Image (cartoon, rainbow, N blue to C red; front, side, top):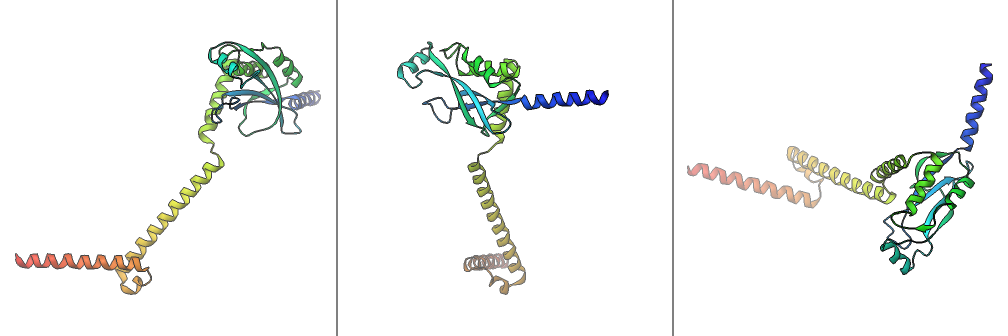
Length: 232
């Protein structure tokens, strides 16, 4: 009997795992806005476990780049909006906020029933995204905002782009080479000082000239000190 119960529970768990899909939020620039300001949000859900494609829903002004639309939004007036459905590949920048057993059709219906009058304060892409995320994951809006903020900040500060990593590695390598050369020079000069001229011949002309100048300066100072001692 216990074996049957355990097998039944395992079957149920496996079925739930197969129907459960990861849910993400993607941040992108506003249409026509600066590329470094990722202020627009899109809710994404796995299309299936067999591929890396995502189905996304976001909320946009009907004519986002129209001067009249921009003016209305700046003046905090409503403008016509619409829900857009996307099919996109998974991105490393996508922020996972949980999982859902809801189907894509469920989310499609929920997305389409929202108010389509877009307003920057009361009904914009973020409200649309968080309402769908709440419906999909069951998390409260407060929990969603907290998870989104902490994950985004963590990845922003810890993750580095490939270019940044290459620059850091290049700088580190250059610093290491410079330090290695400095140590080698100091070591060679110390050996030359201790063991005499034959080792100096190993060094380049510029190093040899520096050592000879130092020796002359030292000898001059020694003779000056001896002369001052005799005068006393």
